Image (cartoon, helix red, strand yellow):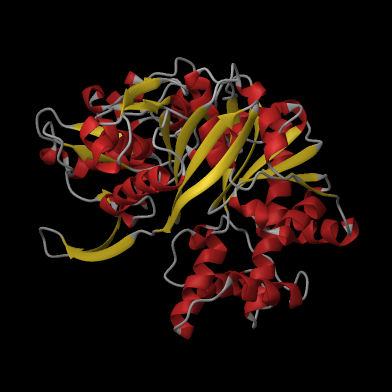
Length: 501
């Protein structure tokens, strides 16, 4: 193995991280160089008629500023040279740019309420079965198909000659080196890519009135797509490192880092703000059964991720936000964990994917309303709310596993949990209890690890992703959990199924 140094830029929906990946002496080491928090901001603005509406935006300037900080911290704390950079992000949103490289307004965030009715608008243009058979992606409010169709209906006049669209990861490759390409893992989740050809579907684009000319070129993960602008490289004190398309969708990178022995037997959960629960399959499964189960076929790295998007720790993050506003102080996670451990089991349950939890003004109020609506006792203590969420997430994983095992014809025998959520020991144990299978948790920074491994693939440091698994197992602690208290969890599952519509 040749020595290589790579930088993984990993943007999640609530924070960003920059990691140095160091390959040498037959091993791999991950070193964090920069971390920061960020969130979308809501504005209340009038339209041309004077009607005021809430609009939610990302601050791409802040995000790019932190990429530059990450490059400087790498130069300061790791090395004077860098072989490559890879960027992964959440799986929605993007920005239109003018031919002169100016952003056309602010970048909308995927929870913005302009998308609340766009699924119906898209289905009015193309039949749901037809859309699914082409793209393999189920209908979600935040899909880029909805976002771009909304743009063509409401902002088409702003589309100046030569303008082009950049998905979120592509936007930062553009800022780093003028690159206007997107990798197939990210393109696949837009509901605009043909799952078989892995190119933009001209049928879908035409139906939604989206010009093909504005869309970026789709490339395979591991492709060298450019290099760092010399001017920017000089500013941060580095060389013009290669820019490599990775698994631009953070879930693709996370799945690439899961130390799976047999894909047929493994359920993989990328645990974070969202819980992406699925299996690796060789080809898209676009049957009616898969569509009715709301499963997506997301482009992987040499495979396909047959999965379901489930609400994840967003529910807890929003409870934390509401309580911090009420208390006027930051709430340490350790304090919240103590509340959870002290709370009684199975006081109440919620469907984590109930639409009322998608973007409510007050998550605690939304959960109280759900409990009243379903005839359950409303929690009165904060710890009870938290335990209710974690128990409900674990039970939802069981439900999704049953569906995916049936659709794929491959029953799960083990659960892999990767990503930041795998640090939650309680949720890991609850998952083992609820699903009734052993759980293997780790690596924690799976997205950054997968990002680094695809860069290594592009640089020729490793020959294939299976080669990366040995490096991952050697470099990171992996924790095992065995099922416990199956009787109580089976009883809770019977109750849970009655709550989920």
